[in-house]
Length: 234
Image 1 (tube, rainbow, N blue to C red):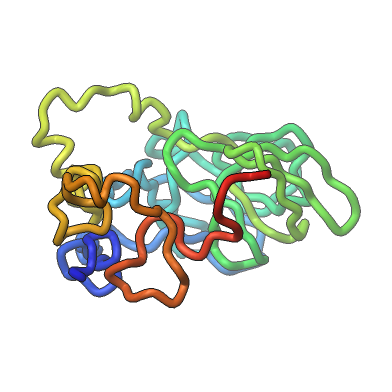
Image 2 (spheres, rainbow, N blue to C red; image 1 turned 180 degrees about the vertical axis):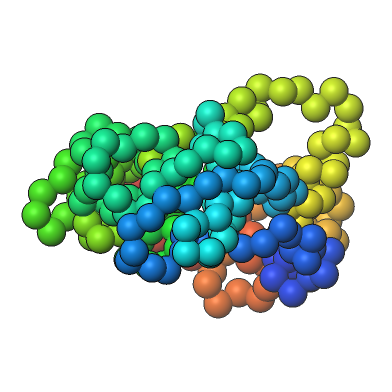
């Protein structure tokens, strides 16, 4: 059987993301020295849903970070300093009061930021006790992290990106093309019989089982792969 398109993406060059066009790496700098930073410019990266801001710190280091709502060139942000928090400040989770919105959250101290990095998103600190900080993510899931993990205070910019219409198919095409994803998607039952297990209009295929064994060939691994149970519930 021909391997269906959904199973060919792992080794395909058609669906590869051309990340050589990326502006740069977005990470929080690795230092424990409290200081100020200044936003010197903004950059657009076609692989991100939020603009990047380039921040230059007092020790001369520069880095790219997801921009927050209300950011502008010349704005001063604080890094690991005590005092009231404001949008754009970089703090440790243990130093941020509960109820504050944060983003670019580290899973481990000094990993640069892994969670909540898409445009318009933010997580909320719900509880802070000794040795653990609880956050509510945009998906409403909760996670417990080390108080030493660093975050950026505020909400990521470009939250209204999903409200703008595409107007024409070309805009949608170039968006998906930049993500390295196949588009448009068509239903498996609309394909020919040789293209997909569910394809074809013969009567013998209309009621074919939608489950596949874990040990089946790659061409047959579609539908529910290795289900825990099959058949009607008694």
